[in-house]
Amino acid sequence: MADRTTITGSGNEDRSKWAAEIAASAKLAAPIALAFLAEMGIVVADTVMTGKLGARSLAAEGLAGHLLFTPQLLAMGVLSSVAALGAHADGAEDPQMVTRVARQGMWLAAFLAMPVIIAIVLIPFGLAAAGREPDLVAMIRGMLYCGIPGVPALLWYTSLRNFSTVLGRTAIVIVISLISLAVAIASNWVFLYGNLGMPALGVTGVGISWSLASWAQLLTMVIYIRRQPILARYRVLTGLFASDWKVLKDLIHVGWPISLSYAFESSMFLASSLMMAWIGPDALGAHTVVISISSMSYMIPYGLSQAATVRVGFNTGAGDPASARRAGFAAIGLGIAWMLMTGTLMVSVPDTLIGFYFDITAPQNQGALAVALTIIPISALFQVVDGIQCTAIGALRGLKDTRVPMLLCFIGYCIIGLMSSLLLAFAFGFDGPGVWFGLFIGLLVAAVLLTLRFQNLSRRLTLRAPTAATPFRAA
Image: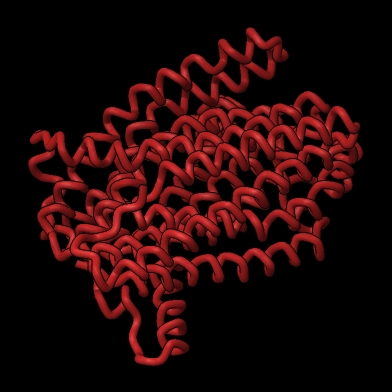
């Protein structure tokens, strides 16, 4: 069971409660965020190491990375329900339900792996049918197919990580992420470049490193859960063959809208990559670099979002709506503060940041550099609204409110964001900057709608608390 003094905060006055909540939120979120940063380090390492092979390979790796990760991200969205339901059970002091949720999360991960693998297998055929260059499709195919063996490992690990997060045992994810980063870098050195007697596989070698890193994550987490006394007490790795259809149904019920929310956001960013590819190879290469920089910054609000789900869910399950509301807004505030700092850094030293990815003095990279310098200030602008929408939706998941936020995400990401990017980039001729201004507009709309949703639901929860006989359940 999670430490209640850590989860709920302390102090009688409102100011001290907020201070305690912010400190507790940061304490829970920091290891998660650092772990996500380390995991993003794998993406950065892949990009940087592939960049040594030239802009063409860099563009192929960037697009393949999106295509490989997006189907897995959708499955991971469904598995987010493990954190939401587990936190409610922990807040209600029901350890048996925590175990049931964690075990069925493993079942759900196994089921989800199958459609993910099928989708990855079919992607190269779709690219070829769309008329993409044969050599680009060949590089993407190699990376995708070599990444398939890591799919079940990543999904099982995601489920177990959510279980560990529910119980406040998050420090291990930093260790696991660093191990997987080391595995990825070493694997790239061997397979990407061709060392230790192995052939130089180029972009295909990155797929191998993805798979090896995913299995390293899973095996390390399994060892930790078996040996960590508090986690081992829940016995989630025993009795895995016993079905529990009611819990599995609840996980799917809460999780599928989260997955679609991820799908809408991923579709917006994937579509932006395709639009940049239509503009040209330099635009796609620059886009890949700036997305990587933005994604590194995004990992902190993403960690705060995960913490918000657990903390809001715990307090809701414990019947403490005021603390649940406070936890959500604390996460949103911390997300804003972080993104303001990173956005300022991006506009202050853009050359330095871009220079981590490719040689900005090389003549063949000048086209990509020019595009990157025009879009990185826009990326800095949408950092803030991206942090707001990310933490707000995490807080809503703590209330088990996932269906309405899914619709709000669809409006913000797919209708407003994509249409704005298409119009600004192609109808009005702004090219790359137009794509990125469209992303900003879509994220701004989503941030406003999701924050208002949490404001209204959490206020209703607080007002109902004195007379509510049962825990609040959002529509």
